[in-house]
Length: 437
Image 1 (cartoon, rainbow, N blue to C red):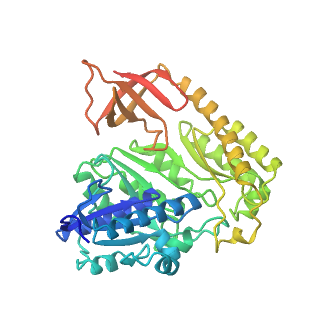
Image 2 (image 1 turned 135 degrees about the vertical axis):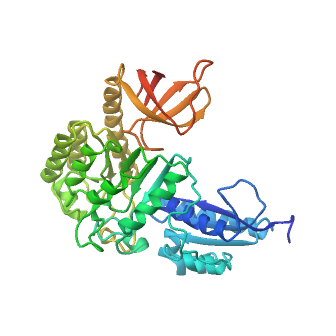
């Protein structure tokens, strides 16, 4: 029984998971707005007629969060606070049949590539002319910029190909138009994302064209920073670094998930590389772009990982001194190649090993940050929080990397989305403090 009047055609889109999911939600919201829907993102109001949940199915914790969110809105539907609940995204793609049985109260489930079907269900038209049109959920001055969908890599632990399908590149012409559309609305930073950036172009141009794409995007008027996320180490196109050196608005930043360093682990993970090749690649990248900030992501507790494998990872992290680093504990995912292996590392040990890696990285980050004291950096300011204006250097991506804090006092005013030169005066493990120049 309804307890209140719900606003017709008012939609709340809830996004879980990664930045690639966020882009999908933004595109969906742009289409809904063009169809005269009143659409909001993760609104706390409870007067929406429709809720669309864009789920994540990557690892156990993310799957559980998605299920909990679905159940929360199904309960709201029972109470009359919502009329329709729709579910899309990776969890829905991967477990649609199971979800339809387990949570039948959801009005419809959709996969990761079924945007037109969602719109049709809502009696909305899919507007092909909306190239690059999105309702940004990030601050207007930066946007995640997806250059391809899906993945052809055979990594043993990863369920992404099951949920996102095969690799499909977006054409350079369309991406250039999308970049222009964003820039015209005030976007200054493009954060390039894909399941694998380095595979870009192989399907439509028959060769790796990431460097050519970045070169073209860098000519977009109004785009001050271009940042590269999720590059695969095997077959990395080194000419990307030539563009990075040649173009001032391509950040000296590269996010390259390496996952492990033990040859035993790399072979079992089906990463197509070795310890020595990985070390050589990192050294070549740093030789070519000496001022680069390298971010990587690792996995702790992969099946059969021994203490020796773990120690090898610790020493490598210590020696390599990545500017940025994150680590996940292994999640045993059905229908992946690694699922045939015994998940024989306990959750406690996985967590302990991940913490040990991050303890080393924390010390590395502290020492690297201490070296920045007295230096001046160009900073893009994202927000004001409490007594501080908070921004980032070209070496830092939103949400995952270091931040620069400038005290907000009577003499200091900074506009969100603007650049300013900041001299670093103090530094902690993962934050820099400074004053405007």
